[in-house]
Length: 151
Length: 472
Ligand SMILES: [Zn+2]
Ligand SMILES: [Zn+2]
Image (cartoon, rainbow over the protein chains, first blue to last red):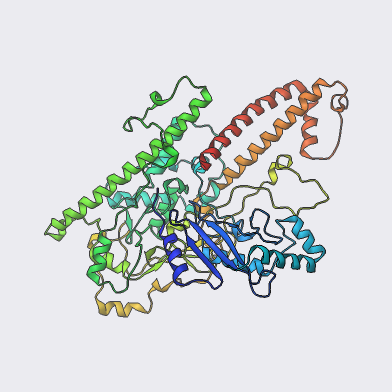
């Protein structure tokens, strides 16, 4: 097993010493490339008061390759599918090695604050979102209460 | 963004479509003067024009397996960090923050760029830097740094692969002759890669040991003039490491000056710079129109396949490139004084110098990718065009094969329109163009296409092999 690159060690340290408000990320004891993440739903979004669990994995080629991130908590969102996969440009074509775990998680938090049904991953959700935004938002709130309640 | 990491299989492509410079890179001149000559020769070739022209000239020229192996070995040899090949306190090959398999740039081009001081050398990085270190502490720490980072000796990929006697070039006896020819080729390629990995570790280790021995010997030698002058003087180590900078991509600490992105003037170490490259060729992203069926990639015109230059890691400006302002406080190693003779200017001289020193960062405003001072990602991987052409060819063969199957169906059916109507003059789409060609001699054409199919199948097979390797 190759040793952990300095970059990952330093990112982990800096996440701990200078945490992002509303976001936590802790490496797994047995695998320092695997992080347990929580993101608080942004205020004034349908996800407000929810705490969402995610998993984040840094592939071997990180930072030349994007981290792999997935929601574990169910969420009603046009850009997040039933398996928790996230449609976010910085996780795909717009990844850059100058981005970090911190910036990725901030982008995901921003995605919760502004869902984008025109670039959907969960087509059914996006459709409902476009057809009847009010209904979709109330459903998102309901799911947040149901699955992402603070414990 | 198109910044993807080097992939193992692309190492192979990197050796195709290259011109004659390959062989010359293996030679290791015995003294600095000779080496300098070699360097200036390399540069007279004009790195930029080579980068633009080596493209695809040789890509279809079939090389023997043995020739290809030798080219690969000579590339790998140029990636060995050698303590007596230094420029301003850094070296001509990467320290090893990224694995061997990820180094797929053209090493002879990069070496020329470093010795021409158009690209920062590969420095040995410090994991951390503490400003409270005294001069002696810093010198001691730098003195203890290895020439190359530790390498994974047994990557999973090469587990259980026999390597035989590395001293002998021929390893045919390791190949299982009871396998099919195709399986034998696969096995041969695996063994070659495992052997090369081993050899690279060996070559680098020899160099590490030589570096260490020379350092010990120098310490024992009381007469400074008799010490090995290829080793950096304590003054040089102190000068370069006392004021460094953290690379924003690998988070390692390097001597100044680093390279700076041409567009937004952000620092990047050379080791990270050589990792950034074009993404794989792909079809342009189309706006998805739900009313139309999705065209599969197989049906698209291979000529539409594109590959985009890497974008800046920091500001996403297309066509990533850097500029480099060589240091003003030292010129050592190749093209300068022996690193062992370097003496730092006295304190009062440093103060005079400080205002005009370039080491505070880039002095120049952003530059276009065509600027002669800029080194772009494409320049150090001149084979990108050949790769694109190769991928287009592969797709063209694949669709030719699809047509072959289509044609064989037509031949069976005597009433098929293409057998009766020999003067169809329809649009210039690739499919109709192909069926028109059939008409004069369908059998010959079919035969051609069958051959193409065989080629395609072996290509597909090769692709599968590579991807299974990549994902293992
Ligand atoms: Zn770096
Ligand atoms: Zn930039």
